[in-house]
Length: 160
Image (tube, rainbow, N blue to C red):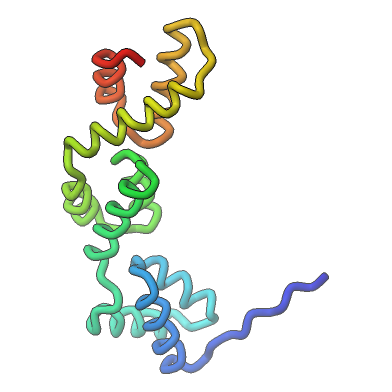
Protein backbone atom coordinates (compact mmCIF):
# COMPACT_ATOMS: atom_id res chain seq x y z
CA UNK A 1 0.00 0.00 0.00
CA UNK A 2 1.49 3.29 -1.07
CA UNK A 3 1.49 6.28 1.20
CA UNK A 4 0.05 9.44 -0.31
CA UNK A 5 2.79 11.84 -1.32
CA UNK A 6 2.88 15.10 0.55
CA UNK A 7 2.37 18.08 -1.65
CA UNK A 8 5.37 20.37 -1.76
CA UNK A 9 4.98 24.08 -1.26
CA UNK A 10 7.05 26.15 -3.68
CA UNK A 11 5.61 29.62 -3.09
CA UNK A 12 7.26 31.35 -0.09
CA UNK A 13 4.15 33.50 0.54
CA UNK A 14 1.94 30.43 0.83
CA UNK A 15 4.55 28.81 3.06
CA UNK A 16 4.70 31.91 5.27
CA UNK A 17 0.92 31.88 5.75
CA UNK A 18 0.93 28.17 6.52
CA UNK A 19 3.88 28.63 8.90
CA UNK A 20 2.05 31.43 10.74
CA UNK A 21 -0.91 29.10 11.31
CA UNK A 22 1.46 26.35 12.42
CA UNK A 23 3.11 28.66 14.98
CA UNK A 24 -0.17 30.21 16.12
CA UNK A 25 -1.53 26.80 17.06
CA UNK A 26 1.33 26.08 19.47
CA UNK A 27 4.65 27.69 20.42
CA UNK A 28 7.46 26.25 18.32
CA UNK A 29 11.23 26.45 18.42
CA UNK A 30 13.07 27.87 15.46
CA UNK A 31 14.53 24.45 14.71
CA UNK A 32 11.10 22.79 14.68
CA UNK A 33 9.87 25.43 12.25
CA UNK A 34 13.00 25.13 10.11
CA UNK A 35 12.57 21.33 9.92
CA UNK A 36 8.91 21.73 8.95
CA UNK A 37 9.75 24.24 6.20
CA UNK A 38 12.35 21.89 4.74
CA UNK A 39 9.80 19.08 4.95
CA UNK A 40 7.47 21.23 2.86
CA UNK A 41 10.19 21.36 0.19
CA UNK A 42 11.39 24.95 0.47
CA UNK A 43 14.91 26.05 -0.41
CA UNK A 44 17.35 27.17 2.32
CA UNK A 45 17.19 30.85 1.36
CA UNK A 46 13.39 30.87 1.49
CA UNK A 47 13.43 28.97 4.79
CA UNK A 48 15.70 31.50 6.46
CA UNK A 49 13.65 34.42 5.12
CA UNK A 50 10.45 32.88 6.48
CA UNK A 51 12.10 32.21 9.88
CA UNK A 52 13.22 35.85 9.99
CA UNK A 53 9.70 37.05 9.13
CA UNK A 54 8.16 34.81 11.81
CA UNK A 55 10.58 36.11 14.44
CA UNK A 56 10.00 39.77 13.57
CA UNK A 57 6.21 39.37 13.58
CA UNK A 58 6.30 37.52 16.91
CA UNK A 59 5.05 34.14 15.71
CA UNK A 60 8.37 32.55 16.69
CA UNK A 61 9.91 33.41 20.05
CA UNK A 62 12.53 31.04 21.48
CA UNK A 63 12.23 32.41 25.02
CA UNK A 64 8.44 32.05 25.05
CA UNK A 65 8.78 28.54 23.62
CA UNK A 66 11.34 27.52 26.26
CA UNK A 67 9.16 28.80 29.09
CA UNK A 68 6.05 27.07 27.74
CA UNK A 69 8.01 23.82 27.25
CA UNK A 70 9.37 23.90 30.81
CA UNK A 71 5.98 24.67 32.36
CA UNK A 72 4.21 22.03 30.28
CA UNK A 73 6.66 19.20 30.87
CA UNK A 74 6.91 19.92 34.58
CA UNK A 75 3.22 20.52 35.29
CA UNK A 76 1.77 17.87 32.97
CA UNK A 77 4.37 15.11 32.94
CA UNK A 78 6.29 15.83 36.19
CA UNK A 79 9.61 15.70 34.39
CA UNK A 80 12.75 16.70 36.25
CA UNK A 81 15.08 19.50 35.21
CA UNK A 82 17.61 17.19 33.56
CA UNK A 83 15.06 15.64 31.21
CA UNK A 84 13.51 19.03 30.41
CA UNK A 85 16.96 20.44 29.65
CA UNK A 86 17.71 17.52 27.32
CA UNK A 87 14.42 18.06 25.50
CA UNK A 88 15.20 21.72 24.95
CA UNK A 89 18.70 20.90 23.74
CA UNK A 90 17.23 18.49 21.19
CA UNK A 91 15.12 21.38 19.93
CA UNK A 92 18.32 23.47 19.77
CA UNK A 93 17.24 26.15 22.20
CA UNK A 94 20.23 28.26 23.36
CA UNK A 95 21.68 27.41 26.80
CA UNK A 96 21.01 30.92 28.12
CA UNK A 97 17.29 30.56 27.42
CA UNK A 98 17.23 27.05 28.88
CA UNK A 99 18.70 28.29 32.17
CA UNK A 100 16.31 31.22 32.25
CA UNK A 101 13.29 28.98 31.60
CA UNK A 102 14.31 26.41 34.22
CA UNK A 103 14.27 29.17 36.86
CA UNK A 104 10.47 29.22 36.48
CA UNK A 105 10.19 25.92 38.37
CA UNK A 106 9.48 26.57 42.04
CA UNK A 107 11.83 24.66 44.35
CA UNK A 108 9.09 23.53 46.74
CA UNK A 109 6.84 22.40 43.89
CA UNK A 110 9.80 20.54 42.41
CA UNK A 111 10.40 18.62 45.64
CA UNK A 112 6.68 17.91 45.98
CA UNK A 113 6.56 16.54 42.44
CA UNK A 114 9.53 14.27 43.12
CA UNK A 115 8.00 13.03 46.35
CA UNK A 116 4.67 12.47 44.60
CA UNK A 117 6.11 10.36 41.76
CA UNK A 118 8.22 8.34 44.21
CA UNK A 119 5.20 7.70 46.42
CA UNK A 120 3.13 6.54 43.46
CA UNK A 121 5.92 4.27 42.22
CA UNK A 122 6.54 2.86 45.71
CA UNK A 123 2.90 1.80 45.93
CA UNK A 124 3.33 -0.23 42.73
CA UNK A 125 6.56 -1.99 43.75
CA UNK A 126 6.37 -5.50 45.23
CA UNK A 127 10.04 -5.60 46.20
CA UNK A 128 10.62 -6.69 49.81
CA UNK A 129 14.37 -6.08 50.00
CA UNK A 130 14.84 -2.46 51.16
CA UNK A 131 18.04 -1.87 49.17
CA UNK A 132 16.57 -3.18 45.92
CA UNK A 133 13.40 -1.17 46.50
CA UNK A 134 15.41 1.99 47.09
CA UNK A 135 17.50 1.30 43.96
CA UNK A 136 14.39 0.83 41.83
CA UNK A 137 12.86 4.05 43.11
CA UNK A 138 16.12 5.90 42.50
CA UNK A 139 16.37 4.58 38.93
CA UNK A 140 12.76 5.52 38.25
CA UNK A 141 13.31 9.09 39.42
CA UNK A 142 16.54 9.34 37.43
CA UNK A 143 14.64 8.23 34.35
CA UNK A 144 12.15 11.02 34.96
CA UNK A 145 15.02 13.53 34.92
CA UNK A 146 15.54 14.37 38.59
CA UNK A 147 18.96 15.01 40.11
CA UNK A 148 20.68 12.14 41.93
CA UNK A 149 21.51 14.08 45.13
CA UNK A 150 17.94 15.36 45.40
CA UNK A 151 16.56 11.84 44.95
CA UNK A 152 18.92 10.52 47.63
CA UNK A 153 17.80 13.25 50.06
CA UNK A 154 14.12 12.55 49.47
CA UNK A 155 14.57 8.80 49.84
CA UNK A 156 16.64 9.25 53.01
CA UNK A 157 14.13 11.61 54.64
CA UNK A 158 11.00 9.65 53.74
CA UNK A 159 9.84 6.18 54.62
CA UNK A 160 9.44 4.91 51.08
